[in-house]
Structures are given as structure tokens and as C-alpha cells.
Length: 169
Image (tube, rainbow, N blue to C red; front, side):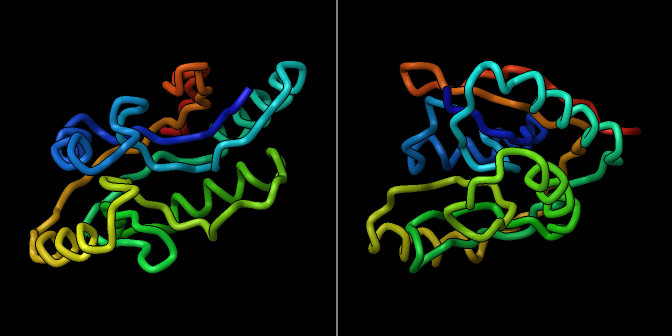
């Protein structure tokens, strides 16, 4: 089965993200807005208890923190993805490292850049228009991060939460 590890931001951040995602993100109906901590990976059900145990250790040794979104950016020319950028990437990067170190050690497709996707699979023209238009928008959003989620993909492509892990207060 396909799994991933993500943070779902506050409902206010999700509202803003979804105002763009419903038009520009092909995954809009499959998963709420998220910040990926671990790229999707295949895992046998028998390996799940070991992964859950590791994630519980990571959560219990990680302080909660605040995510600050401050601008819109894109991964062009690598991919035509547009996203809300994080001002404080360090807590996400540290959490990603803790999870990836003992988790599924598959090589990731891209270098880890914490972000919240608001558009994907865009044409070059669409991407150029959107980034030009949205780079002028003032983005000042925060979200408390006090948990992360192990999610799995159903046969219809929809992602569902398998387990939630609470960070230290």
C-alpha cells in the first residue's frame, strides 16, 4: 500500500490554499492541503508496527512549532508546481530528517523543500501568469504545528489518515 507522512495546516491556511487549489491543483479532491514530510512510499502491512513505533518516538521527541507562510513560489523549471512558501523551513526540515533517517530509506525524487502546493500540472503559460500575478499578493499566514499524520492511499486515489502523532507541547 502507498503511504506518506504529512502535516495538515490550520483551517484558515487550508481555506486560503483551497481557494487556489480547487482551480489549479489536480489533487484537490484527493487530499486536503498539506505539507509533506515524507514522499509517498510503498510499505507492506507487516512493516507498519515498526514504522508507527518510529513515528511515535519522533513525535514525542519533537517540540510543536509555528509554520509561517510568507510568499508564493514555484519549482519551475524542474516542475510546474506553484506553492505557498514557508518562512521558517528549519522545523520541517528537522522533522523530515528525523522521520527519513530510520523510516523508509528510499531515495526521494527531489531534494526536500517544505511547502504547501496550491497548483500542479500547469502549462508553462499558466504557471507564468499565476506566478506573476500571485508574487504581488501579500501572504502572511501562520499555523500551529502540533501533530503530523501517517496517511495511506485508497484504490480511488483518495488519501486517508491512518494515524496521527502529537508533538511535545
